[in-house]
Image 1 (cartoon, rainbow, N blue to C red):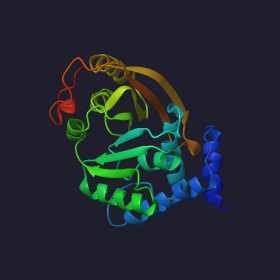
Image 2: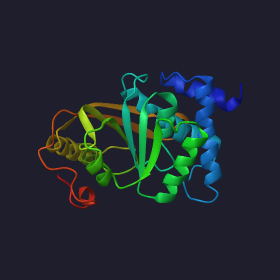
Image 3: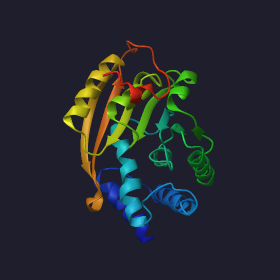
Length: 239
């Protein structure tokens, strides 16, 4: 077994996440594909495989800690997917059908090529679309919405609310969540018919960063009409 495959499996095991040899191979193949494309389009600042294992693979696998069954056919939307994180690693680790969305067309083209190369196209696709426009055409479709380094938590909650079915969850990863950001998120969640139900903290391997994974449940319909106009969630927050 190669050193990198061993490393992925062992580091995931440190977080009680079982990864098979085949899954580790696909996770590493994704990193290789990203690095190859990164020569011509800026997808990531993380270029070494060691750093990518810590800060892309393990970071993405932490979302699984907030999910229940990984074997079902849940629908997940990964907003602001960038180079396919965490959407593609989650697809490798689950049976979910996953839509990955980004506002940058070139990144979406790259992610769709990764999906093809990883043989995930039967249940995964990337879309060049604003999240508000996606919500207008896919109302309350998803059991999960994920987001990584996209926006403040209150904005992510507003983005996710119209995409989620009742009982569905936004799972968001934050670096250092301030009390102010959390307080704003709690108040926004109430307006959007959502509630923060879990908050877990992790330290990435090799001092690669602090992560807080928040799970926000949609418990009822929003008290305001969502989605609002494109860009309004950031420009004029609900709270």
